Image (cartoon, rainbow, N blue to C red; front, side, top):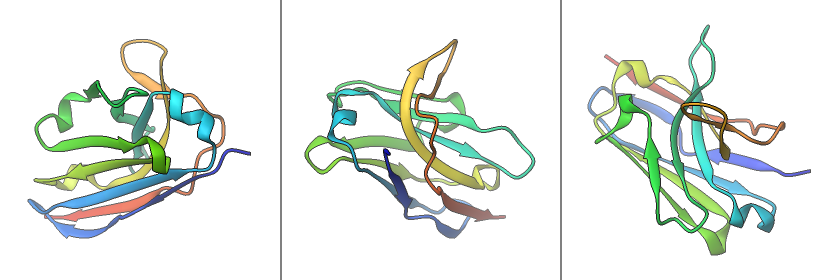
Length: 123
């Protein structure tokens, strides 16, 4: 019953920038850490970035540190991902979800995923 809607993807050249948004329907998620995940063709879904419930703390996968910035607007039930210096290997469908620790990196906590938004980076 929780709905997640991602937007902002598109086609960009290597070195370019994109800004993604995720709007979720339940205010109860406002007290949960949120994260961005991505899945490239033929590969497993992987963690990208997460942000605490208050927005005071962030955590990033090593391959995006210094290039991506995650933020949130609690009042608007929205999480953002600002991406710069994009690389061809960033090409993937990007998803948002709650972020929970199940090992060394966060994983999505909700069983239902949104449609995602496609990011394509050309070389």
